[in-house]
View 1 (tube, rainbow, N blue to C red):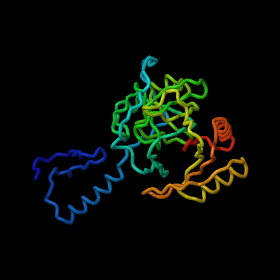
View 2: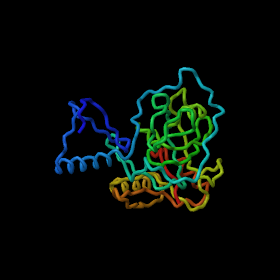
View 3: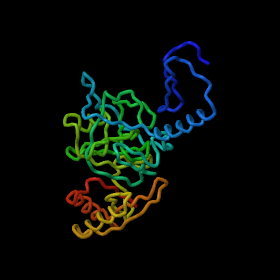
View 4: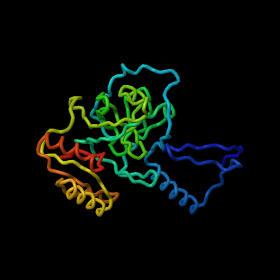
Length: 290
């Protein structure tokens, strides 16, 4: 029994778990029923804390004195296993459930990029690594951690390679949150956001590789837990836009995911034509798959 009164914080091995001592600073020997209830509740708590995410604020900022990051090298893809943290089958933020991809092969996506800086500098990312705003890293909602991606600013055509080691951004329309260094090199800092294309690359890929060239390919235009929503999207794209497609169901432990695939796409010209038309029909985020 602890006899000296104090108020403290006992930090457990898991980064999300902590218990406070009672105000009188004294623990009594708990009964078996209380111990069982505590362990049961703790297990539920730990499972709920299985992924650390960032509720990114609307405004962030860089260093008080501008730092020249023009010579910071691109991230180098490596053959490493997925991180111990940050890769659950699914997780929920602000009422939206996100399903983490098993691998990033042939992943390609277009949408808005934003950035985060000093407010999170040095804090733990979802993968467990500390966030370094001067390194070439990024956050993504569903790519496995870590994944290396080539990010191209579609306004100025500047490109960088970053290591995705965090979760976010959780603002509508944004697909990737860049580190301060990556955003600076891409010319995103001033405006805060920019339209980008991101393409997953591996250690075996040349850095300038765009997408897989092994045809036929498919373009994933959406993914839904409700098959009715998948059917509605496919019907709209087939009837209004003239696209061919199918629904591919992926059964996961957390539930079935119904993916809307367009194609097959037989060559690079067809792929370019299809992806250029998608934004006209409200599809700003898509994946190229085999």
